Length: 485
Image (cartoon, rainbow, N blue to C red):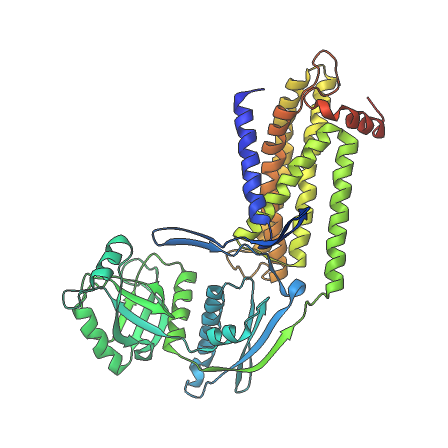
């Protein structure tokens, strides 16, 4: 047994244990006892809350289910456009949709459905939130008018407190509010820098009152950053190059056209504050129905069980080790679903189950290649190493093609000529993650397990395993099932 495989084996076991802890339910009841000693308690797993400086990673480690599996809340908001000019109403509606999407993301809801609809003078925003229990809190968060404001760095005339100074030294600058808000911004729009680079820029136009405020702010902040916040979250923090008295400013940077458009929409969400009110609110049950969900899960469990028994019956202890690697695959995948987190829908479950088949497919290619090497006269250890190495090309090509398909369905760059359906994206995301993890478990985990746990008598081709003595009887039973050797 080599030292390096043994260390890697222990590392893989440690990784699987950590993933298993993440996979455990948030509350685990423990009841039982021996004689007078009784135990009746519930172990509650704490939230995962990690941080370095200002970087925070916080997860509640629960599985997020989509509307088709869990149901949720259906909300319809109506936007009051009475204070908006008719030519600006479409932009205002898009801005409101953008800010609602931003707030929902901050609320921690994955894969919401947000869409707009307008009919004559009625402008509405439809929001569906999966698994939302506190509907009132969600309405309060989504329904308030967007708040845009400009903030400046602390200066000599605006010294921060000792606590604020310490925070500024150890983290980002604590910006100070000014009296310039979204009400003073007339419009933000995308333009192109004609004088120099020709790249997209975001042009700001202020109202008459905002023009004077902006002039005073820029005059005292030349060479400093002026941050723009939307709903207490920073959008951008450009540096003031000179005092601006015209009421028109330009935000430059290495923007792509899409990034510039998004920034303009977010700025207009504060510049065109549209009051919205809830006109419809109702709870939505699982769209597939609980019976359909249960049957789908049962079908997945039956299929997985058949795969496990097939591998064991066909390849003996090699198949059992492949099944162990498949178990590690499932544990790690579920942990990643919780850490990302991923909203699990029925198409997403389909992608996961399909990736299980691809994980096993990699092991089948490897084992069949190992058999070919043994038939050519090579010893078991050499046949195993060659089997993994020579099967890799086929495994790599097949999984690369699948990953490319996942990329097209996921459409991360929002290309309009590709699918934008949430169900297609959920399927692509789970399948893509599953393929990547299956490559790891099918190659690294299975190979390490074989190197450490599996051993044959090199003096006899196809000999019984010597590394797992306690399993010899079960091994002979499996050998009889598959016809013996």
